[in-house]
Length: 261
Image (cartoon, rainbow, N blue to C red; front, side, top):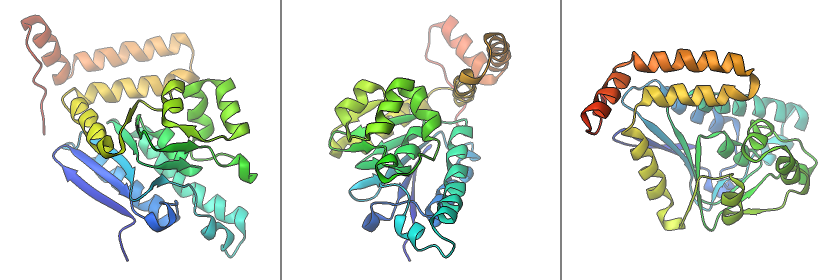
């Protein structure tokens, strides 16, 4: 049996490829678990400074595996409860990682695949690809963190529009709405994502982790609490070797030389 998630490590960047192209990389329990394990392993590896998630074949991911759901011995409700549990662990891992995760959306990202892409820090989308919320057209409710991330990216009104009407979203529209970071020609998608990852890898990973955490937490706190978190975060960065190097490089008018493991 082929691996459901392929791993390609080049230097400080790891590419994780969902590998069920015959079913448009539909998410099942095996895929969710394999992706979570890879994220945990490479998240803990100090030599890894960036992770790219993409799909094999024509799709990024068409979402949850409906054949698994309809064939579950305890019925579809139990099936979705079980599947969502594993997918949600994966999404939580992405948000906990203190290093950049880039979704390279090579084809359709629908349903749970749409939510998985939204959970990533950055999204690069092939010009020929499409996004589709997918759930509500099939009388289902969004999962995979979709209801958390979507309104934070596009605002409540637009998120409700996307959810209620469920129309396909082109790469051009996704870029205009702020759903994706960049659009690239299909043949340049992975190159673009890797270039972004390499650029981020030259910066302080410690600082990226601090900023990612602060921005993620900012929506559910008071100004006073967030100001205190910023104060502690700034002090933590200033006391870190990367922060000291960055400040010395600024004063000496030279590029910073951060420690690379």
